[in-house]
Length: 460
Image 1: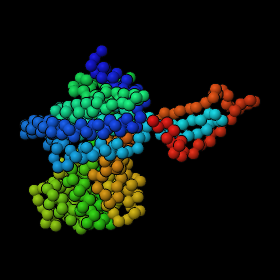
Image 2: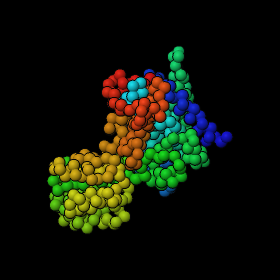
Image 3: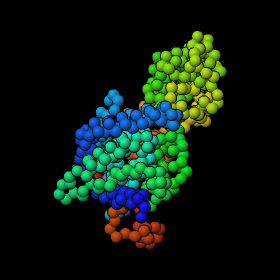
Image 4: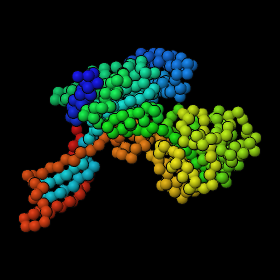
């Protein structure tokens, strides 16, 4: 048996055991993880510094992008504190496992319940962003899933230090008498591409693949597995300045959406401008973007407005068609002037990636038309696209952002790691007992009100 299959089988066994773990046990494990990460902070930060030093040399040699390098850091500012806070946030979320979402009396003594349950075994593959190890591990634990993690080699030391801390925390969390011991192999880490290639073939053991990284990574995984994939290949987000856009709101929203974290998948990559505001609102937005060091790839009409306003700069260039539909992940933005709201919507639906798009307008009807017609996981009115994030949505953390039209869409938190099963409680009935004719039963199909006693009927 290969090492990959051993990992997958151990994850499946852990997944089966996790079905019997109570909410209190999950909470105890999460708090123990927080404690160990706090205790090992210096060790983990040192590993992160070593990863960044090695990565900086790769950037200088042209073998690693600067945007990927920026995602490595977990020590600057409040990043480590935010990492720990995320564990508390996940712990505070109500445990969804066992909750009833549908209850129906099919007949007397024949009751049907739809019950939330874990997906099972999740394979998570990510580049840089070592905090993903903690985010995914905590969400998996809270939702009763086993997780197999594979991070990028550029964060290998940090990933390993974080994973060892989590595994130690799980192993040293005591179980009280009568409880199932929390399975130690519920969170595992693999390190080689060969293991990933093998795991992508193991739909017998793995239930869901979650890739987090570049377009090429996500596309490769989508094209090389039969296992369902949750994620997105591109983060091409647009912001549209409507004809009634407020200039102060427009400046603040667009600058935040582009510069708050340019490497993020929810950063705005395209700015669409209604022709009626190109010489007014747009000029002020362009002025603010240039002051923030953003390179403007402007179409003919927006370029003319920039030049007429005396804003010509080395940061301004003429846009090509390739600029629209391109994910920069840097301080660049493509700009196009449109003649109507519908033109903006059509552009977004043609060039966007179904991630997150925003409209800046004072007209509710225009905002609601935009939000209905734009085909994206997130559609915003007078707000930065950077809000597309599980933490900001109050999910505690996220497993990723999905542009799929499946069980999870947009920033996916706990619910992205859950599915459901049907519980049917009978008293000896057979399907043939029901139908048309003498002696046959008729279905009642009466909904059972879901109060707290019914909703939590199967919560451990």
